[in-house]
Length: 293
Image (cartoon, rainbow, N blue to C red; front, side, top):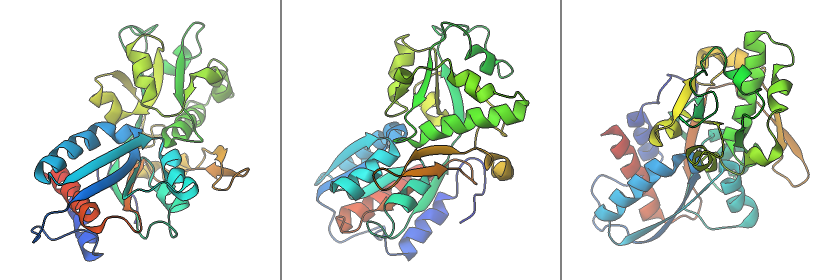
């Protein structure tokens, strides 16, 4: 499936594909689903999944939705390596599902939404009244400025944040920019998942953090929208994005992988093999319909 559109793939198409694959129930069922439904998802998807959980449980009171959020890579490996049970897995990077769960733990993977990387801050942030789309990389290098990103080994937003910085060096034509910016970011500012940085921003313990634009809007943060050459949102710049590469821990212990993205940011969702069929399929259908509404 090629990357098309800047905002979101057609959820109508997604629902149709799932129904054709037999992965969702008809609109009406003889008996409603029941039991526990375990959903693993990216931390960046917490707000929409929280809303979906409440509405789904109101519609299907016999189902208890149990959600666990974290970095997408970490959540997928909890299934594939630790053996934790789950019914649904939603990832901030659809490739995480391909690389960690298919074919042993899942049969299919649907890309359901796009996103982009933005630099978030608040009114409390140092230089908040000066930062712009033209000088953000200079602000991040200033003494006293505290900025961070999530762990690239655990969270796609982490390796995407580093890719943004690599692409900025090439886009602005400033040799060594990537290393200069990272030199002003101590390791303690790298957190397991990107949403942890939101609290640091809001409490004034961090000035700037890389997040998805959806997270920035959900938490009412200020943010800098970068050029499409940098923000990983536009399929027209696939060739340019390909220049960025980040080394992360591999699927097998002690190995390394190189992450690069030929497409803009795409989220993915799947149903784990041996999942509760009724509840799992039903929540996928319910999620599609709520987003399309």
